[in-house]
Image 1 (spheres, rainbow, N blue to C red):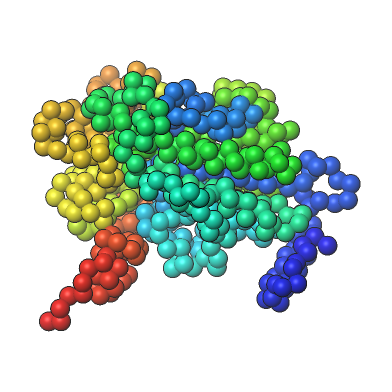
Image 2 (image 1 turned 180 degrees about the vertical axis):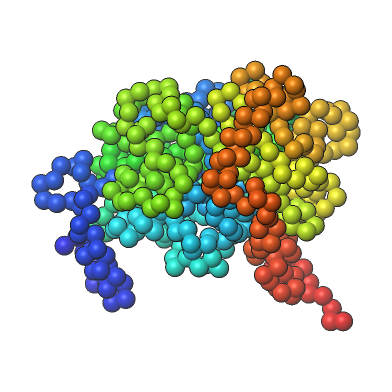
Length: 534
Ligand SMILES: [Ca+2]
């Protein structure tokens, strides 16, 4: 019997399990007597940190992080240097991973504090239907409310978050013991079933323990501050505190790899390590410059993926869904926009494996509620080997939300996370002291931006108005426009459905903006006393 069920389980659980056993009988990976191990469906461990930019891994050459687990996956598998999230904000990025579609193709799935429309079921449900045991620890899909979108069940699977760290870590670190929760998930796996597990660390999302990086031996002298931030000890220390949380994420990944190795499952597990969006600093997270959307990515699957390769093909987070489905022997539905990475993964080549993988398309609509009317900051971007082209569809708006509105983050410039660097840069005296940096991080932006990324890796010299680059700019806009048209972006047609999407934050000050709640509910959720009766 494939799925021995404990006798204590209810009949309600047994019936679907038996139906499932019948449904998967024809799936080619099902372990048959004497079948070679390589024909078994692989397990999938999907490790996704929260707010980590691409260059902050040891394998990428960063000297102030300690990421032996990521580096091992890269060394024993493939590392991608041109991996891009769909959007630089938690929820839209995760929705795109799960659906394999761009944020302009998934309705309310494309905004922070949105929902998951049932029209675009996540790949995890297809894995479940084929017999996969699925679950997650830490942060899964979100933040938002998936239920109003009408999905019949959770977008990932069962939650494993009950095991807590002992001793309790510093307050800035998530108290949940991710690796122990992975153990709990494995213990509940029915015999003979492959698994999909989502390890969603909440690190290195803010807040940080101030000075933790330096206290743990990191050196401010190792930090290279990009030209768009003030180069001060405060900024360097803030970056090291971020790095310290990357180390935490990696330490749990190391424990998970060790566990899989100990139970003999590591080599039949596709291990993917990435992040959902870039570092929570000005002009990084919630921006379509590289620090906001270019992601670490390493994938390991011995016997299938030739090891030790660095690939510079452009990979999108939309590509995970079709990759996993292909690996599991499940047909890829036509609704998925991403392309399977399997041909690149199984190649023996390094560098550019597939010449057609030469561009990334990224997008932003809404992060926090940081404009009075709920208006978003719409951007679409095209990144190639040589250039970054951005189209700011509403250049009259402040990219950060601006100085005059208290956002759902409870601050002005709400799309910049609260941080030492934020407080420092927004101080009026420092605005005057660092006018170039302040303008780059906080200023309004023109309709078009164009950066020559080979000459200008910080992406700070906008060439869009330079006559010498006119032909390049026109060619890139034509390419981006054609792609948006082909993939049905309402923004291109002048429509703005995003403006009307609910902001579904239900706890804290942000609930003030949740129009799906009554005024009394908003007050209660935001922790304010109810208004006196009129
Ligand atoms: Ca995030």
